[in-house]
Length: 202
Image (cartoon, rainbow, N blue to C red; front, side, top):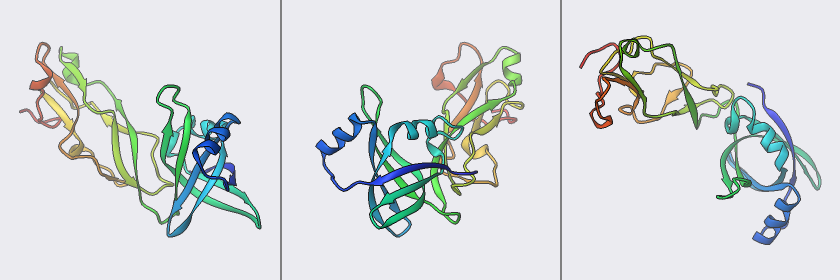
């Protein structure tokens, strides 16, 4: 996966008032750290960030930051490790960038995508999705856009758990006993959702 490139400037004035002033001008204060390097405070353009986050990988997009500073420029490859937003407007207020390399293994959260039609639904069962995301450990350049969950073998009173997922591209970090999706008989309460994996009757 190719990285997206954004420009940044070194931030010399650090403080709440300075951060507010930056946001008013369409910029966001941020910090770059990790990979045994020094932490660097930077300023990035809000529109550039939003454009990156609207891409296929969203906040998981690897970014090449071209840093303009006194004494010359440099490049940093990063992932958006933490994004602070205004609780009311949801505007980006600060970003923590984590340095990554081809040898890095990072933990990210990716969406789940249900595919196919469950046989249990065809005979009157009710499909219930319990989680919509999966936490994985992966190389920053192999982060998937989503993880597919096939419903093709899911019958009534059956479920698919995290432990039922198989992959070689990344390691799943989410709790293995979490139910991803289940088909229950109509009229059964959510508390009675079975835990049997797909293809095995309880």
